[in-house]
Image 1: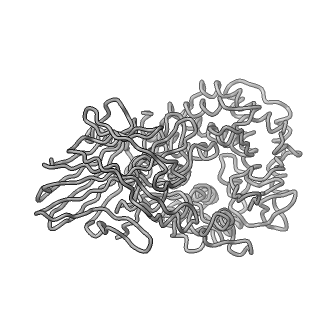
Image 2: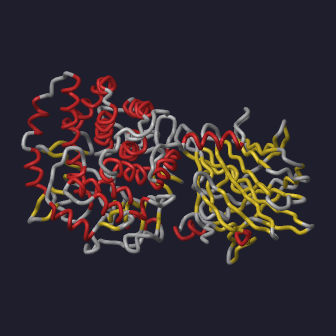
Image 3: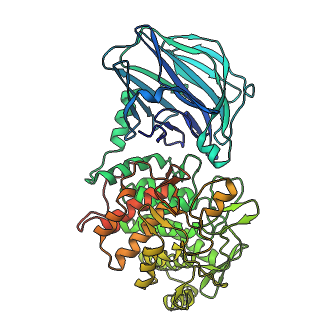
Length: 610
């Protein structure tokens, strides 16, 4: 049993609860309650741990596990019999012949977590709970004395505060207000990554529960008002996860994808990403539109279009600075095209039409980072595409010039704009028609160099990367050469996603590990990305490959409980980066419904309940 397997539950604010099944923290990002600031989606670990000691027949048993320098203590993971993390974490223990079930849920609408303990043979004579407080940014760690905490009681809660936050924990017993620090917790994943990896945590005292009720519910909340109890939260979660989908793997993907959904946006990934424009619009078809959540989709489009400046949507809508990218606004048009394909909502397209027109004109006009050169978009600044790995002043994949997928997106944006013009009764400008004229032929001529596909032209870069797949997979296909897809199958495809660079390339890095420099240098130079399985599947099916074969090939990926951001380029079964990534889920769901599911499926599965 892998006691370090991670779990995560989240709410619609971007807050979450996450740890391992042993509750040993392995990242700075783990915590029983991690709350989000909706202004910028910075998150704060409030309650790092809540560990328990159970007393049976006068003997104490700790269910907790922690990493310390050179040792693991205590070793409560030895009591774990089995566990599940879907639809929420449930860990089953056997302690001295007594079965114990520990379940944890998070209220989708509030910063509230409830832990339930159930006892099946004997009820413990006593349970002692030890809260460990952090109250710090989830990227950082604290050491002893860096925080001052206060304690109070009110109503049904014990209250723990610093100058910024107040945490409430159920008054389930009596509180012994002692107050001391636990020293030198080690976070092994951070240690491997070369980031913050040692921390002290503050224990304000212990909650002594005697007698013990069965079940025993412990509510942990930041809310001053009444919030849902365990049974109410469980019922809400079950209802949110309901689906008519018969494939259990896809049903699980759809259920888990709810963790990314905010009020009017999507979290790009857990633990550390907030909303990002590019990620949101790549993810939307699978996470929001295909399930039929059209009201939610319209809120997202309205949110982002309202942040547009000079026809460009910032790539990070919540940053204090305006971050441009060469593709985020084009992905907006792509997602809007998908929205109309499924919803046939002409009224909303009419409402968004001026925004689409502004985007198109912004690319014709150009800016400090990119401009139109003939028919094609030319990038003159680094980090303008999704391959944006950078450490300090070093950009590992700058891709200056005319990147292949940017221009495939540009073509699709112009075709979508023309399509929207027809359905809204508007006229397409002559300069748009001039660029579209013979675009496909010129694209093929320019991006095919000595029989190879260029990743970038002007200057030519023949690195064999997966970006050309979008010339096949996007709604308006630009290429149909099967030999390039065959080369992608041989060089780039793995059962866990698609490599970002051919292993034959001297720049290829097969392992995403080490310090930030080493990781960033590998990020787009061989590392496998699950989300790229989506465009790969679409490209292959459009060009005659059997859907069943592709579904079998990616079966491990589709059946994973947590689909991460990336995998190693060699030995691609090793997950890396974020433990859950929105576009990994979004593109697998989209490609399943659009390309892999048996003929006769509905394009609009599910109800619009968002």
